Image (cartoon, rainbow, N blue to C red):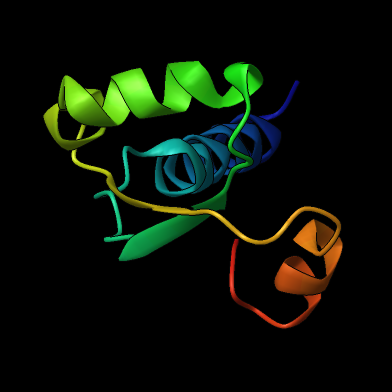
Length: 84
């Protein structure tokens, strides 16, 4: 293999390493704002109430607003941007 080919391969490997560094470098978390979670007044929503009460969301830097829409309008709430 000629010296020119070796230099070319070295340059390609270096460029690939730099590109991979910029693609996979750790990103700063972006603030999410308030996440509106639609829940029903039902026992299946109990974990959400407990997590909010014990501060699990805030401990992880997430601001959650529990929204209790009328039963049957949950999908409308998502469509109308009342819940995320």
